[in-house]
Image (cartoon, rainbow, N blue to C red):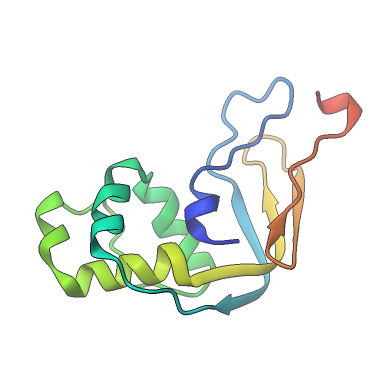
Length: 123
């Protein structure tokens, strides 16, 4: 699961008011090379919840992103875009879990696929 996907997932358990961002428990991380596309990154930047991305990338062992959302002028820096690209698209949680910040419910991630299905009592 890429961090792009993680940045858009939240816990939808009945009664949860703050199910974002899901905490990551890591068992295995892989890196897959993806073609660098600066235009895609520039278009995605405003849609990304920056703190969630920075925290998630650190949990996967990558600490090159700043804590605070950078100014949009930094999008002209190829060095910054490559770090953003690596965190967003190339780091992948292969095995582990996503944890609801409110309930602690764990959603397993197997072979890079998060299982966000709810139990009957959670719907």
